[in-house]
Length: 371
Image (tube, rainbow, N blue to C red):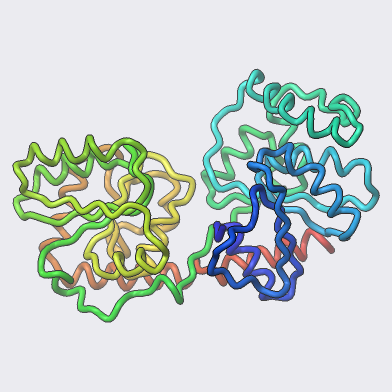
């Protein structure tokens, strides 16, 4: 619940759109969500595999005249084919949030086979829906538009799915700037009296966390390093490597936090460190910048349009501990720089990466598609 695409749906509902959300699983018995009146949830009670949505989708199509259907491209593909049996086809928009690697023919055929049972439940076979596809290009041809959260994700969609660039829009995921906001603190000095670095996201090697450990080994000043997020099995390696630094730096692992807890941790930290090796956009980065934190990030393509090195953060060479250490030192030794870059970071999010900006862009796309 409360995923990025749900936030978008709720935002569109606030603009007057009527939204239906089809999801696997079921509504939690206990939840704190207050749904907008214009949002209706439909649950399949199944785990959520693409084929599980077909029967439920077709029954909803008989009740509602959908103008647009939005979802991941793999989940949309069977719905597009199933919809061929109903008049008044809606527009299908794939919402892509991750970098897509090449899909092999074997994997694609296996994916199609997994849908077979769901179609037969309705009395159809895969062949009747003309699934005679051999590559991921069929996925691209099945949708009307692809919306990518960044240029790098859009490039991958064009390459892997063969989508015409005229049908690809880049709309970054937006941050609720009223929730992720700077706290009432003076960043010219260290918030807790001791330098506090923070990382939020999955705890994995590909996030550059090992590079951060090597960078900390180069620092003379001791710091607290806060890590928030789900451990992907890499935390024990980080702990062991930090122990080799003879307790010079303190690791504070907080696990997965609620949104409210996460905001408080960001507001209570001094520098956001996110030297990831690869990202589609970097939601964690946007949230940290929205909270007014100066950021240290790797020089990957996804971050190019977000961080301007020397203005609202510092971009470092990918997989370069020495480059990370230099960036950290510049912030640790200069409170005014932390303040300036943090303020500029906040302004960047307000101008270009807010939830309002995302909803505006989607509203414009919907107008283009339906008129």
